[in-house]
Length: 142
Image 1 (cartoon, rainbow, N blue to C red):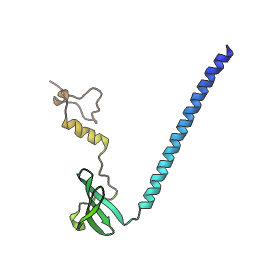
Image 2: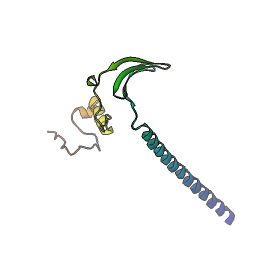
Image 3: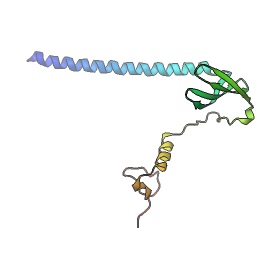
Image 4: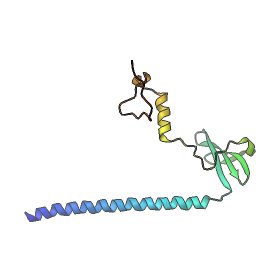
C-alpha cells in the first residue's frame, strides 16, 4: 500500500511544479512586454512624425492628420497607398491637451449606457439590488 500513496504524492508534486513554472512564465512574459513597451516608447520620443487623429472612411480606408515637424497634413490611407490630401493650418485643428486622456473611464461609459437603455424597474427611479448610489440618497416612495 505505501507505493500507492507515493504515486499520489508524486502527482501532486508534479502539479505544483507545473503551476509554479506556469506562473514564472507568465511573470517573465509580463516583464518582457513592459520592457518592450518602454523601449518602443523611448524610440518614438522626440520624433518629428506623429499621427494626431484618425477617422475611418470606409472598409480599410482612413483619413489621418499627421504632424511632420511643425507642419500638419491630411492623408488618405488605403490598403496599398497613402495619398496627400491637403496641408492643414495648425489654427484649424482641435488638438488634444498635453497629458490629457481622451478615453473615458469604464464607470463613465457604464453610466452612459445605463442611461441610454434603462430597465423597466429603473424607469420608475428605483435602484437595482446591490447598485452603488455614489453617496446620493435614494428617492422615497410615498
